[in-house]
Image 1 (spheres, rainbow, N blue to C red):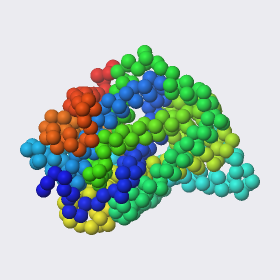
Image 2 (image 1 turned 90 degrees about the vertical axis):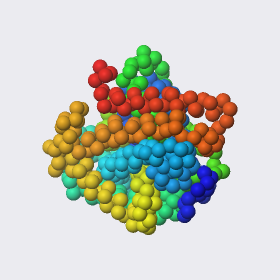
Image 3 (image 1 turned 180 degrees about the vertical axis):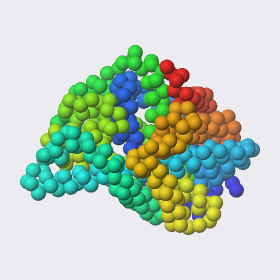
Length: 477
C-alpha cells in the first residue's frame, strides 16, 4: 500500500481544530490538576516550573511529533501503524514493540485511572449536594461544606476509601461513561465529547483562576511559581521530576498520540499541531497552579501536601473561602472533564487495535475492553480496604510495600511508558526511513535539523534517565 494512502475504513477527524481539541484532551488530564501542583509543591516551586517548561520544549515536544507522525503515516491502530512504518523503512516489524508496550501500559493505567476518576465523581456529587444545600439556605456564596470542621472535611477521603461498595460503584460508573463515548465512534463519540468538554474545561479553569486571583493570595502563588531558584533547579531529583512530569503530562510512551495521529488528515501540519497541543497542555498545568496555590496560601495551608492536595487540602480550603461551595463544585466538574477526555484516549488505543486485529464492531470492542478494564481495576479499587494488606510484587526492589494500586501505577509509570518512549525515539531517530519521516513532520530547513538532533540524541538520553532513575531511585542519593 502506498505511503500516503488511507487504510480501508479509517475514520478521520472532521477538522484540524477537532484533532487539536481531542489530542489536547488526551494530554490534559488529572495529571495537570493533581500531579503537576503536587510536583511543584514537593520540588520547590519555581525551580521545578522552569525545568518543566524546558523539558517540554526540548524533549516532550519532539517525541509528541514523533508519535503523531507514526500514526498519521500508518493510518491504522497504534501497533498497525508502527508495523507499517517499519516495513516501509525496510526494518523489522519487531519495532512495533514500542506500540505493544504502550498498549499494555495504557490499558493497565486505565484500570486504576478509572478508580481515581471515581474519586472525582464522588467529590462532584458531594460538592453538588453542598451547593444545592447552600442555595436552599439562601447562601449560594457561602464556603463549602458549611458546618463541618476542617478535620471532618479531611476525613471524607478516608471514609470513601473505607467503603469498597461505593468505590467500586463509582469506578463502574466512570468506566461505563468512557465506554459509551468510545463506542459512539471517532466523530460521534471521541470528537464530539472533546469538542464540548474541552472548551467547557478551559472556561471553568479560567473562571476559577480569576476567582483565585481576587479572593486568594495570588501574589504569593506567583512568587512561589515563578521566582527562580537556580540552586534548587540544579538538584538531580528536581530535574528528574520535571523531566518525568513533562513526559507523562503529554501522554507520551503509551501510544495515545499515535492513535489520534492516525485520524489526522494529510493536510494537517503535524509540527504545528504538536506545538499547539504541547503549549495548551503546559498552559493548563501552569494555570492550574495559579488557580490552586492562591487558594492554598490564602487559608494558610501547605503547598507540598502531596497527592492529598486535590482531595483533602482543597476541599478544606474551599470551606474557608467566600463562594467556596460554588467554586468547589466547578473545580471538581473541571477535574471530571479532564479525567474523561484522557480516559477516552486510553481506551481508544486498545479498542482501535482490537477492531483492526479481530474485525469486530466498535461497540463490541469497547464493551469488551471496558469489562476487562473494570475487572482488573477492582484490584486497585479494593487496595484501600479489602486488599489493603496484599503486596503483589514484594520481590521487586522498591515495590516491597506496594499495594495493587501502587504496583500497577509504579510499573507502568517507571518501566513501561519510559521503555516505549525510548524505543520510539530510537526507531524514529535512527531506524525509520528519513524521507518518509521528514515528509510527515511538516518541518524543513533548520527546524527539521533541530528536531532530528533532539529526537535522535537528547530524547533517548533523557527518557533513558527517567527509566533508570525510576527503577533505581537510590542513584539520586
